[in-house]
Length: 182
Image (tube, rainbow, N blue to C red; front, side, top):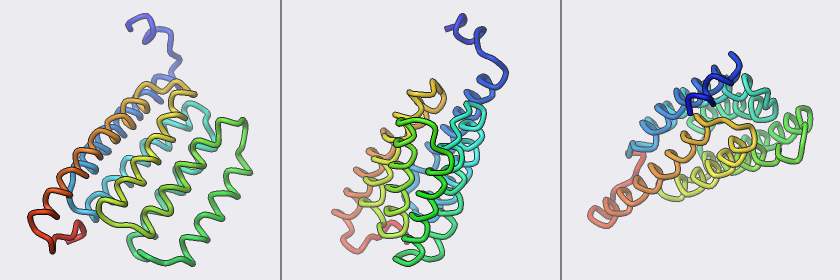
């Protein structure tokens, strides 16, 4: 590993660093049982991810991640709005088309699409399942670009998300009136 670290350029090193910063925010967010706090922490994580992608020159991922930040803010305010969700999906497609470099750019587009549908239309366990699928797509993109921090971040998102789904399921079983946004 030390040889790997010494062979990195400054921009690659910064990309790795921002991947690790995103990791910390993701763990805190997905370990949370409150949907509102999850959204706030995800905004912070996505600022770090956008910087990470920019340093790795993964422009479709960087641009879509900036849109993820906008989407989170809109989804918090307009939860359940088909109109805004469809508009956001259209903007995602337009941005992906404008920045597309290779076939692997399908991974950030799939992640952004899953995340958009999940955040506008779902809550609780279904939300976290869809966000887990989006995290898997982001992980595939991070493997392609070589972001160790990004791979670890999305891997931890998946694991933490599964644990939180189990916790939410247990709470709903014990307290049938429990809702994660409460």
